Length: 238
Image 1 (cartoon, rainbow, N blue to C red):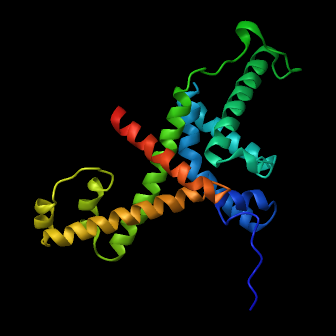
Image 2 (image 1 turned 90 degrees about the vertical axis):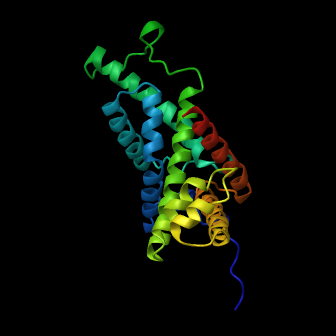
């Protein structure tokens, strides 16, 4: 059997969206994408100044508009990661949303009025909303990965072990685990082995999750390192 021809893009969520338009796989990929980015998008819109309820409405309009206008299909490969692409698209969407709302208030749905001066809607000029977006994205990715690990441990009847391992997975320094091992009724060495395996599994799952949101596999490691830095910063700020 001859080897199949290499694909132009890897089989990631974003590449499926970019490569397909009306195929069922595109619909599934878009659903996955919206589920992954819903909370980061809503959080970013709130950080940009949208009210609690308004952010939900704007986020729904954002995804609906992108689906209707094939926004994801028009994304070009050189735009890089899906995270950065959406970050730019969200800012423009919020800006246009505010302008439309301001125009409706002033003209009651009449011909659009060019806004300038004090009437022009503005977005925060600093990077704080963008940092908030990256943090929410990183937290969402981590929560998805931890949920997958928890389910895996539960299926093997090791849920208690996972709950004991979980607080130590992202810690650079930790105790020898003797007390935790005693609580679980296992040897300290056994717990150390389980901890090592869990950390390796966490790293693998994080990489797989991040790889779903890049087009070029070469960008995966850089995006993963960014995620870990953002998580570390969020923990320090907490």
